[in-house]
Length: 577
Image: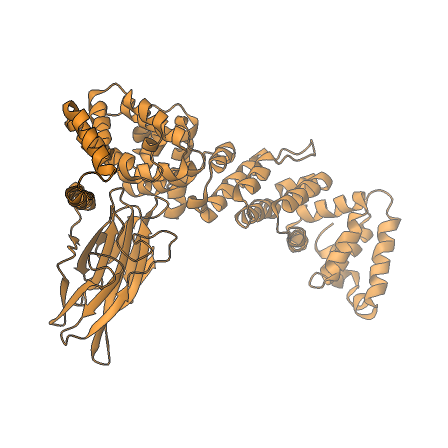
């Protein structure tokens, strides 16, 4: 039957549709469908096609198609005729658009299966193929759980045994993988997600053909992540060399998040890789802080023993471990059993480290006993006499020595970070020395307030006219470098610097509190003039796990969770990158 034979004009039906009420036409359409016994006659097919054509831009078009679906044999003949005759392509397109007007992956897959069950010849229809591939990919990208949605596509099978869906399925998987990568937030990836991705990844993505570099980078990182966790690992560092330096940095942040809830002895190499410094070493202070927060004491002990056995330990490792053992609130050194196990590590360098921690952690009395063991009986006698109040009633000498000892100890602890790391451009804030800086040629002076004259959160800004303005180093955090009285806690040191983030000739004021385990608190203030008086505007207050780095127009540090964070100074405010 030709196109000409089936036009409305040729059949003289234009007037019929115009004069007949729509309800009557639909009733006649149903009657024709019910009267068809076997193969369609030419006049029956012509009426069905012309009716569909007449109502194609109206909602009734879909009502007619739904009605026809109830007559399986007739439905197949009509669809096949349309599919074979390009002149009627628009009818099948409109029909399929409605069929694929769905949102979830499971709904779309069910529709594909149903269409191919009743009309298997649609498999060769290009528009059907296009909708099946595109709609499925869009649905995956819009899914709440990208990996689960992609897994549904991977598991999908057409139930019609006469249909070979494999080629279209392969294309569907490629586009679904691209959609997933496009929407994926790497920082939220879990170990389970990495497993799932490996299961459905096609391995057919062509990096040269993918125009979006972000998708390419995510694809590369996920491939390496799977290799790290699911193949025998000789050297994690070697595997990471497959990536560019920028991708390696991003992968390390992903590793920290993935491992946070999956720390075990199997992943000690991965933990090291997460804190690699790209210079042949590791950021050990941040690594120990990360493990202390996310692993229990037993696992922490295992990691220390593993590193002592498998790494060539340098002074950076010794310094960081020593600081952790001595000062961290959750240090395994506080557990006598674990302390004994650390002492049993056989390497000479580690035994030396343990000895140093023992000596520096011991009380003043114990240190005195160790130094003057031969005079133990005399010392004990004097202590007993002093303790009982028999030695002149009061031991002024002991009080004096104790004060001197505590003062010296505090000074040594507070200054330790400055000796161990280059903090340029920061300078240590000596309590007796004011922080002096210039704004527009006028000298400004910042000192500690009366509440904490030796160092604390109360500050006083004195401008060139000797006008004093009080400030508080406040931060939105459950922990603070200051005690309840606002005094700087033992182990912390304060540092200050001027840094012109926006190159406008007026540098910002940066203050940092830092301790031996590289727990840090950073404040940034911008000079501002109010009514002719100079003041400071608070622009930033952060808690981190490293000393702040000032680079270009940015401030960088490791965040509280061990992740690298960058804050750019744009339009006189800091924006997290």
